[in-house]
Image (cartoon, rainbow, N blue to C red; front, side, top):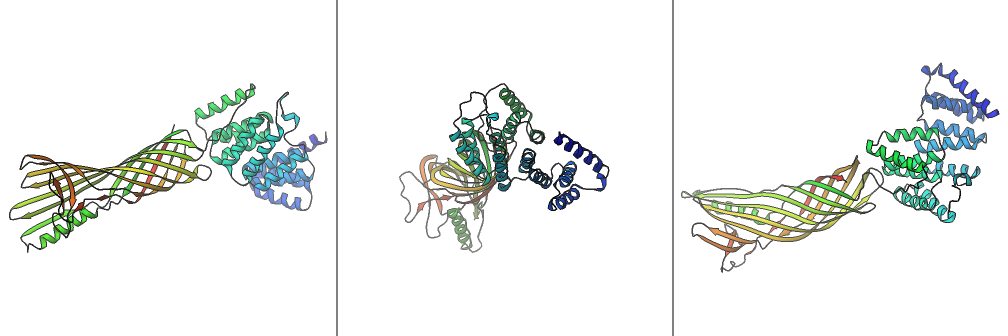
Length: 474
């Protein structure tokens, strides 16, 4: 009876304060309550903290002040509700520990009233995993805490605090769907107006399909079905398709030497010849990866990509004869990429690495006064890559910047050479000649021997590749 009278008094006081609410703020009432609390006038302080909450339901400090008042008045049940609201608005290990102490004081949340009749519970195993989960939660190791809570859930399905902590853990992991479900299950066990309000705010962040799924699970739980929750970081699924784009800086040393030698050779002709050339020094990388989620925060991607390097071209003219040489270079990338995600919530860092197989093709053409010699050469190289980057998870996708360090190159380019001036078609290998000769990159065909000092032409696509990625989960 006394408690009812107190609540009526609180309501009347709030109505009185509402008249002047336009001129007051939540913080004004909070500060007034704080002074009264310091003076140990807990009854009046409680009224002012309640007024502060009335004006600002998100004022965590006011909830904590009111909880302190309830605690000082030995009203541990109401104090527990306010401290839980503080934990939702402003989580901290200290508040969590205080909640545990209050639960112990009032008999804990694992009392017989929280257990189904006839439920077979191994309390030792349950408490071991539950307590470990709480410790991990306090240390902000949310992924580990979620696994501990899920193991505890296999031992007992009717603990309010287990579902409550699971909900907060999923929320910090960015898994709003499971957070809403877990808190909803907690609210079914012990209905709480503040938690109901918080669940409504979480539901607003879900898609309609996710809201329907949560409702179905809650209905099944209300009908007696055991609901098993599983850790799913934001947007993580068993499969994904990742798209990557970046900028490469090919190291075409042999082809730079080719054009340098061409310039030197032309200068030696004493003005009777002209020469111009270009070598690509930047190229795009375009790739995609089917991805398998091996386990929490570990993904395996199957790399397929292309690097259209471009065309090395040169034109030499002397005595009315024009010679044009071109080498169109295209690289391909096949490989594996093991990625490890680091961090909690919807923003994570990652590191990744894996081997690469790199087929590279060179489409060669030499045209002398409109008579062409053509060759299609190819080679395989073996290399690898390492990556660092950031994942931003939003509504079923992840995106962010990344930097790739790749080491891929190939030589021994072989293929068919078609000489239209002599109507011949022979196998050949591209060689780079020594000592500043020009042309310095030439196909050596048939039974010819490579010139002395010549080496197989090399294409090196190693280096740093800045880029971006986009992953779609399904």
